[in-house]
Length: 300
Image (tube, rainbow, N blue to C red):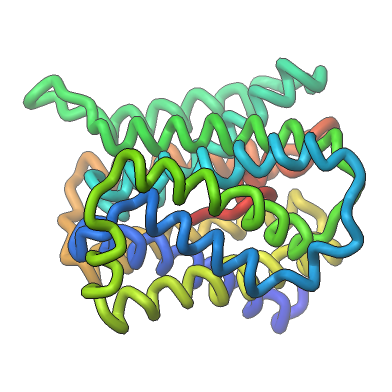
């Protein structure tokens, strides 16, 4: 990889990691209802990317199901998790999309794995369990369980994507945005309260965070990433995307003053080591499995 493209990937991972922290700040510190914030983001993505809705792809109903998986359900659970779990822990836990996608490619696509990827899967889950489970109180973080659920659903959407004809990254973003914002708004107004007032009174910092998620993450981040996917093998890109959770931890500590406990550090090292072991081994049936949700709607 040439240095310019590495800098581009570095910037993409930085944007993704920062967005996890900004979303945590919006839904937790600013008390913006998470489903409403997700709906606003997808509405903005659909609006910005209207030109990429043409031509209308084949298998539109399959694309609708994919959008539900990698869009509305995935992000609803992720944002609900961010409301109660620290951004640094979410940044690491979200990487479970990689081993989960690998397991699903085994179950649904007939992929076989060797002992190295098998060990990587076990390490990934063990590291997340160490982060999520507090042995002193025998409690599991509910917020991180939402994030694990998000990883499962997003990974299943990635499997369904194999049934679609090839689409560009921005085409996927446009259709996911179009199919996702209305269900999220509907559920938000049924379940959440005071969301419009909270969003309006959040002022320009919350609106700027929304614009960053739309333009910085969904348009720049994923557009640039799909450009890199076309130029380089997934086996080269996927280990480098582990910069994303590292940035998530760094920004969580620096911007939100989140504590860095020995349990978090140990769990992160174990989990990311497992993800790395999976990412560097070729998946013949679903190469995108090594990228987790990054191949769908993205990291955050």
